Image 1 (cartoon, rainbow, N blue to C red):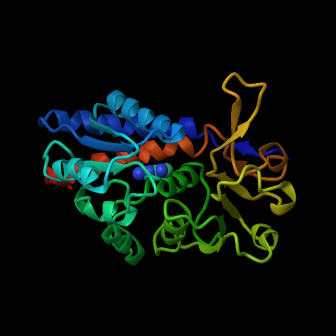
Image 2 (image 1 turned 180 degrees about the vertical axis):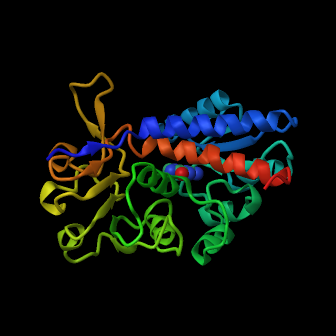
Image 3 (image 1 turned 90 degrees about the vertical axis):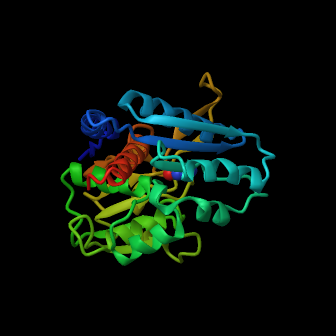
Length: 295
Ligand code: GUN
């Protein structure tokens, strides 16, 4: 039986409406949430993410402070806008787009961000809080995955979840969130990676399979259990001369084949993608509410 498609655009739209209403409520008290974004270099995928973030902020009524720096920016020069925004009361969230150029030390940059404004949830202090199950900013993409599951009526509690990919941005935080003693957790989680011996052995056991490896269409139908929920976090540009841009976007899942086996599946684009920015808007709103003493 063909799977039901999880419409990430629709879920994101619903959540953005909810966030917009809260932003409008805050405006009555003269509070405008603010998000500062720093982009170093000209990576096309990063540029398109950052543009989408700025547009989304504008639509929802969040103030944005955009900082675009050249690829040869020195570490000290990158620290300047971070320090400025750490101390700017108009800014409730600071996001440094990753990956950074190789000559910049990512850990030092993330450590420099005020943890109270770390709406990405990448500061080591916030990662520690997340692992310990304390309230903190949850990283946006894995939080978006959890929202998609919940809002599609998928029971996470007790589920066998298999995550393919162990990145700091998706795989590791998602695994941590899903094992927390909470309604959004209580899952049994396996994390697979490039050194996993028999990947298909694990993926075939999954009630919920999350592909976040960054490898185009690596999850094939024979790797998926009948009736599984399949979440595709991958966004890969694959050369395609028939397209105007010369490439097409594809996920980590062989969508056409796997959709015949899964019960629910996310498409690429239009699945997890729109949720990442939505959760960033959510974290910025929460940060503004906290700064104003409203939570
Ligand atoms: N690069 C890819 N995803 C993300 C994200 O969620 N936050 C940041 N800062 N960089 C990213």
